[in-house]
Image (cartoon, rainbow, N blue to C red; front, side):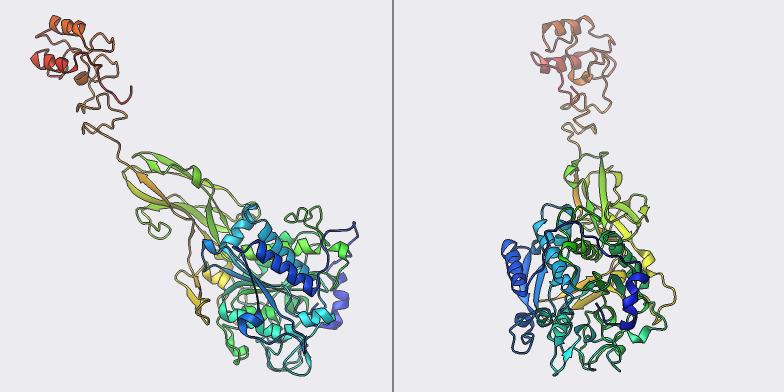
Length: 590
């Protein structure tokens, strides 16, 4: 639990309607130790080497061991499917900055386990691993965790509160911080080094001791007006996390940290949101371009170490209020909602069923849905001869939209449109969507600036390009765009075969090898006259047909007038000779 306004907290639980969890029996989740955490993380990496990479801040960033005389490390688990690309929206999940708030570790481990074990089994979780780069720091304060102590050893002699050690609003340290030196703790440095190398869209910082979802502002700079430039987006994601977290022990209150808890110098939520763009209020000794995230403090439970039976289990883990719901499943779902919102994506739902070789005039049905957003402002299908029809298109369907709360989450809306191709050629088709324009709405923010977070800017600033390349091996970019599209599907529209070049496709031509653009068929047997000297329709041209032709020679009999010149004559006899002892036609329709 954060130590903001400690005198108010004892009454906060009752004031906010937070109850006590009734014991319903043993649950499978149990508390971990530092050593069992390491074993669990190593086992996940070994089982899923293509999806999980385990490291320590000490190995990657060259930081000293955590603790005085203790060889402890800040472990970092990276989860993504590198085969689907390397430059993806990034999310950071930090747990146990306060060493005695141990429930966060179990949320971290179960989040990682679920994402990895359900890869390839659950469609949505698979998409998150394919489309996101997820960094999990399960134990930011290992020394405090082992000693069951809130604080963390710092570079100074005194112990530091790690969540008062970050770089935003550290001047005039009056609110629950030990000194004015930023990043005195190894864990604080580790988090900062991650920010220097990445562009996190969302940052969740898990705590325990009360149940709240807190977003900026929460620093003393903003106690008079607590509305940030990204207040709409911060509130909307907070409410989604609350909803998907579900009803266990009551829906979690959502609001600014200053409104619900009180101010603190140097918290991670305000730092991860504003330290890069409000640099004048950040410690100049520790600059970074990486902090424009939607940052949250997630207070998991009313107790720092709630009873084990209240942790829950993995049955129905994705279902709010499920069979084994508890503090851990609830907050795993909170984390998943945050991972999901990092960036919109559009996905085909019938791609494999669409025919990709067509003839002029054919049509296809496109079915799709939109994920990773709050509202769908408009969505449609675009297509053209350019391989990137999201941007360069020749035609598009009428716009559709959906502003419902589940439009692109939980039960996303299914969209459908039909398109046709009148001409031959190679075309590229993709469904596209524009989302979340309402996130740019503001009331009276402080400072009076437009939204600054990557989440809002990336989907509302066409042409935005941001790069964080401190480490040449970790080059991360954000490209803003108004429309998001699925992978284009190539459609080849082939001109229909026309062997006799008469302008009639073979499939419809009643004489496929003899040109007859008029398709004259006076006896209506499906064969055009020019290839049908089978006058008695017995399937072969023979002496009976020759006799029939002779009987009307030099007359105007229509059926025997094969060339359509108005008279039966030697030209028609020549045609008959070519077919002697052969069938009529061929005709494409027969």
